[in-house]
View 1 (cartoon, one colour):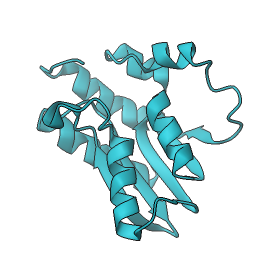
View 2 (cartoon, one colour):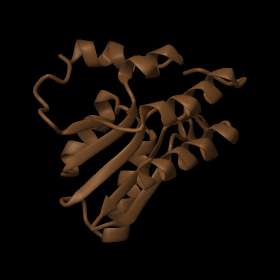
View 3 (spheres, helix red, strand yellow):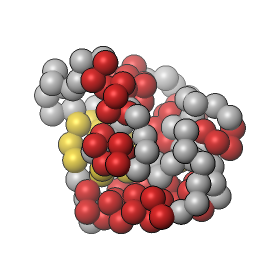
Length: 152
């Protein structure tokens, strides 16, 4: 299993055990060093934009003192929603590795796939997105699915 995806899973687990949001954790890496981490805190902060990717991007930008995350890769438990995907592109993140697909996100109650279809899908993204360690992340999603939680 990829070590950064393992950390993203741990980050997501922190959030779901505290009831802060869905099972979405993210890690941003530059030159082999973690420069940003985050998990979904939508419920904690009452802010629909605070997905794990956004929280990690904010942390990485603050740490590097720049809005330009060229040379960075993002590891995230769920394939990014359209908002997070565009935020990654705006930040110049070079590659995204995700665990579970948009269809997996949908199976546990999230609407990412619906918005993705409205916006035209991902056919033009070439190799920007790559699925890794899906089976391991599905275990996290299953754990989340069995929890008593608030869906949003």
